[in-house]
Image (cartoon, rainbow, N blue to C red; front, side, top):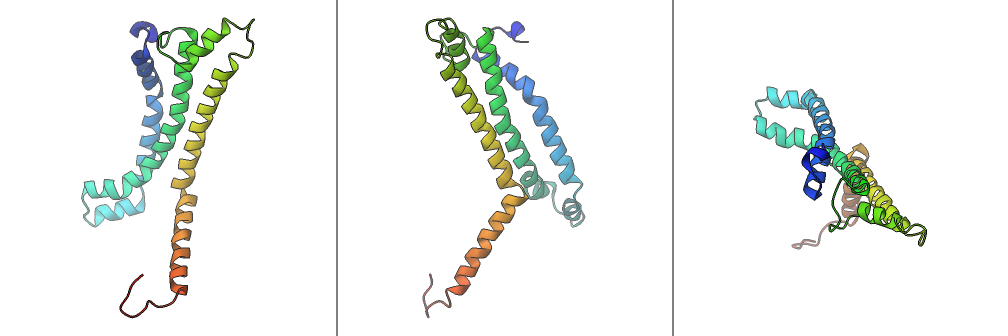
Length: 173
């Protein structure tokens, strides 16, 4: 596909977007269908709530976290795709700085500086690792464990306020 479009940053991003778009379709469709069949959405429909209210209140809050996790993972995948295409010489072209291009150019000096390709390779690995950690953090915070943690923090704050005793007369904290 990139052979039809030519080389460049825009073309590499377009190819990457086309390659990863089915992932977002599958994730968003599966999450939406799971929420649409849930009892609280059916109860909201029966009670006469508008479609916009149901989407804002129930659907988006359940669908956005899986999409955010997929996005964070896809950023790392897209980065590897663009770096690989540039390394092979069919992605972003040389005046544009990319880590794939830096890795390819350092391979020409492998006999003189055998450690030269290590830095761009490590940068690529660390960036993809960071994107995966971000995806894990989003999943942990947005999942049931994250909601339980937030509820636990609220409960502890309420207990501290109750233990502090009554407010002074006429004043507030």
